[in-house]
Image 1 (cartoon, rainbow, N blue to C red):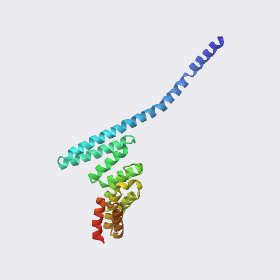
Image 2 (cartoon, one colour):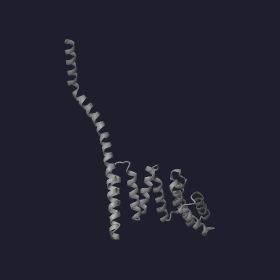
Image 3 (cartoon, rainbow, N blue to C red):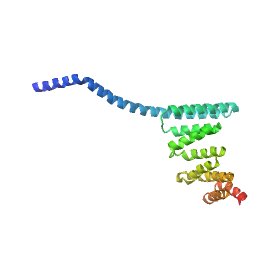
Image 4 (cartoon, rainbow, N blue to C red):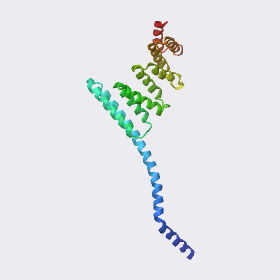
Length: 218
């Protein structure tokens, strides 16, 4: 019994002598766990915040689209500011690619082409495997075409056409590439693109447009 009491006293003395170290150890353990927990909670919160704001902004833009042109412009500018703030201040979540897509599209609508190009390129760099990536690359191609950077536009369209995961827009991007080839004076490449569409997607609306273009080129 005495041995038990001695062991208890030694344990209590050890705890008393080392309680500061133990407290610090517990604090460190908690400090390690809390940020992980808070980070997860922040991620969930940021995800919900992004989707909530994207929905609200799209609604506001739809309403503004029915009003005077200056209201529509004001709405797009407001959307760009809001999307930029969310992108720069919230953590990366599953909603971030969609947020960046909305930002790039708003910049495109506002004819802020350089800013849209930057956003789309950042998207491709960060989320190149995302299901939205082919559409983002296509939009990038359209802007480059509008800026007169036709060869770069063609490169974007051809990358999409070669991607087996992007077959659902292959006809359209081959048509886009053919159009740019025509503008570049590369008529043989344009003809090849149009024939590819007709051969691979004969019943599509793109095939009808390709046939129309071939009539002028051949």
